[in-house]
Image 1 (cartoon, rainbow, N blue to C red):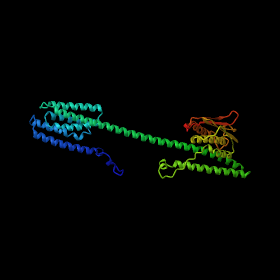
Image 2: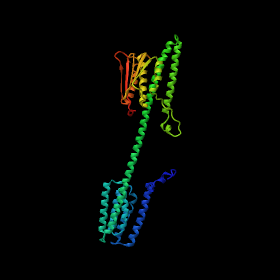
Image 3: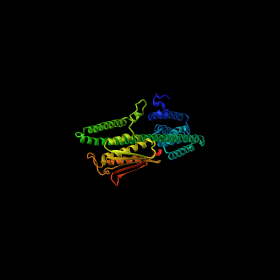
Image 4: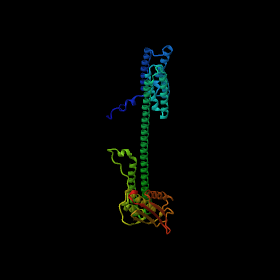
Length: 411
């Protein structure tokens, strides 16, 4: 069916009718049935005759027809009244066909009542109709009884089927709502994890850049009068480092500002990707650390190989944070970086000859700020099921050691 048709036209007629419509329809049925039953009672003059019996017949007709519009609101009460009135009509040989209205009431009751209760109501209704047929003066209730029982059982079966179908549709709707809620939860969880990842990247980049800037600004301040050329070099390093970190921050914040839905929409320009350096960027990192005043000796053991991007990024960030701590806290002039490529993992060891992490080298850096960096390095290693240790060396200095499994399944 075309999508531009109104939604109400795509639903079946029974779903488009409101409760008011159904009440009016039941009222019309009840009015027509009452008029027909009253006419038959007035023209056929069944036994027993007499004014009293005629009043009883008309009262039974009213008791069958008047409650019908309320069968959806009070199904059990309406079924009880109509069944009793139908039994009276059968006993007086008048309008036994009114059992059809009892069938409608039986359907409404079974459609909203649990099976055990509706079966009990069906049994009671059949017994009442049976009693009315047996009381009939003709003494031959089999035909009327058989049709009446079949109609009541048929109404119950249709009502029970409707109840089960509605329960099934409700279960499907609840499951769909649960799946949608789970999907939304996963989207929020993924967004939160992505923001944590970006915050970690931003922390590492900023910590490294600010360490370089802090150290070189101190050098420039001390040498600006005695050795202006070296001071200008330090200021140039500060300028390039600041420019680089500003560009990286713009990229990261651009990712945060771009909604996922807009980024995935057709025709939308691609959002700038967050920088994700790996081990192939080590030379640039070591150059910046050297500019900050720490000479790093790099030694690689084993056969270097391509690693999954996630492992390469984490390894790079561990190295960056460890060397940044050397610049900020160790008071060291040299450090050693050893990368050991084993078949099952990658070992990263960073050692320095400084104060062992017991005091900050720069007064502008408060004591204890390296703890956050150690936590971040430990989280990155443990993310892949690896190991992480950090602490002062007996002979002086500080060592950071991380082992990251390099199996593809851990990436």
